[in-house]
Amino acid sequence: METILLADAHVLTRLGMSVYVHERWYGAQILEADNFEQALKVIKRKEAGIIIIDSDLPGGNGQQMIGLLRATNPSLRIIVLSRQLENFYEVHYIKQGADGYIRVDAGPKEIREALKMVAEGNKAFSTMAYKMFVGEYNRAKQRKQVNPLDMLSSRETEVLKYIMSGRSIKDIGDILCLQISTVSTYKKRVMGKLNTNNLMALRSAYDTLKKEKILELEEI
Image (tube, rainbow, N blue to C red):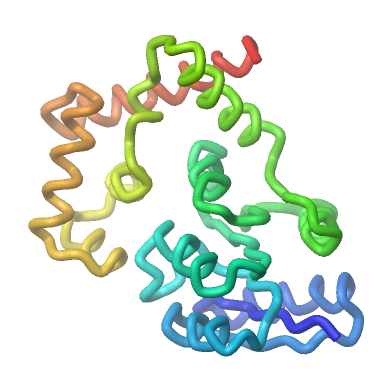
């Protein structure tokens, strides 16, 4: 019997996902966690073979939690449930080693398909994200000019994501469990890599570079 861990701070989200889980794995045992510490304890005890985890799970330290889960249990199947609606962030979860990615605005058909693919041992990511991932790989291989967004580390990408969503430095520090000074350092690195010196210029550069990444897909 399959055991699934639903790691999400929102009770209604866990309840909704449990319906789809039981459709896919009839009779499956469902465990729940509302923060990363609880989830990690379950994974360390190898009590669950699959985890469906909120990308902003409290205490999860952002994208870094995927690598930690993978290191704790290499055979664990990881599905990320994300409230970020842009494929750009999905690429980073591919790199981190997740097995699937479900956006919160996904319809029932998409959710069922993602669970089906992971259950069969496949990866469940959008076509757009895979194209972005392959595009990055090909550009690096051919040594072409790299989009500055591709030069950001996972942590820098996360900080940028929260800055673009209007979060303050303090808020970002609280979410990622980082010191304010550390967040400020990441912010400076991001602005440096994107060649900007204020928030208005950063947002403009971010929007432009995202559009360039989408246009690059036509060449793949």
